[in-house]
Image (cartoon, rainbow over all chains, first blue to last red; front, side, top):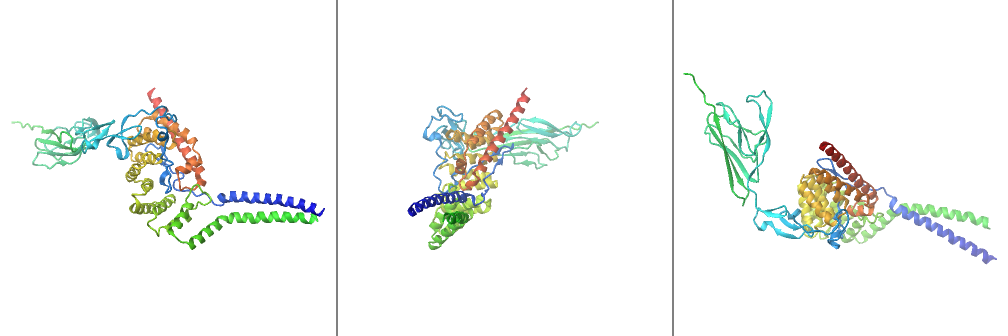
Length: 256
Length: 266
């Protein structure tokens, strides 16, 4: 009888011990992670706004010192040409595209990223455009909307006009001692300068563009020729581009 | 006899629960104390680095502790031959938002081990991007991408700084490249939507934004923690929601612009 009672008590002991152990395990499980407050970082809710206000979300995958390549092995690497997700279905058809990052001057295979052609081998300033190597561009003139102060026959304020990009003087016919404005706008130039041949004045602008308001001349008392000289980037043809515009003075008629 | 023993069991259970609760909540401190004691017995830089790494490991939330990680990495910095010490210190400073310190530490890291720890350039790209030096950040990402050209996070972050530098075409080329390898990546689709929108290609931007939003809805906390290692795993849920909100709001913004453009055409 005594043994029987001891046996019943021992069974209960074990059951209670199991309950206690389970409670403790649960507490350890929960307590291990919940006993501290979450630590927010500079990255957690970080977004940057684009120019139009869209939210750009950076990541930081391989910043980890023990990085194992988790973010480097995309689908195409393991099943090249056969991925079918995210709207990029079917085979990858290789195309010639311009590389990016460190390969901006190279033509690469759009699927594998292999370099097909290194444009820099053609010349120092060759570059990739539309999947082909192209020589350095010559100087070009870019049309733009220019602004001119409306004090010549107008009623005040400013007027705008479409400038061709080539060197223009406005007005090109002046009363003696008046000023004019010079307009120009170029691209692919290494450098540009506008000079004049009038010994009485000293106008000179080393700019690739006059800006929309142009550049105002000094007071002009005799016919003056303004010249725009642009240097092309190395290896481009022609090496220099020159344009001139003449500003004339309205003759003064004296009654006899 | 039974009437006498029943309350004893009850007292026993209550006592164990009380002791257990105290032990559980004191447990992390106890572990840290044991760890510190072991370190003091063998204060090697290697051991310090190992402990530092344990406290910065997102896969072990119970040990995650930036302060302790920083303490051990500083101890480890006594041995400049350990390759990643300043890299990790820079990451901690970065996570804490101390960008000047982070930049100084990552510059030191690159000067010491830059040729072998290429992802230090990635960390410097991140820091430069956060402080708004987008040109410097782009150069760092380009350096990193030379050795890991299909890394979606590096491509996405490269696109981020290109977008901030208003180099939208370049950003688009970068994310299109990344999407060849990661066609379901929410971050890349989101950056693509942004690039297209800034280029005025609103209809294409809308499709990309829809793809981003759909992909973001499937991002798990585990995936988020992988994308942002070093962050506290307890905030992974917050991070996932932030990504989902960003992609969803972008889609809404682009949708409105698309509708406006449609009205204008009518």
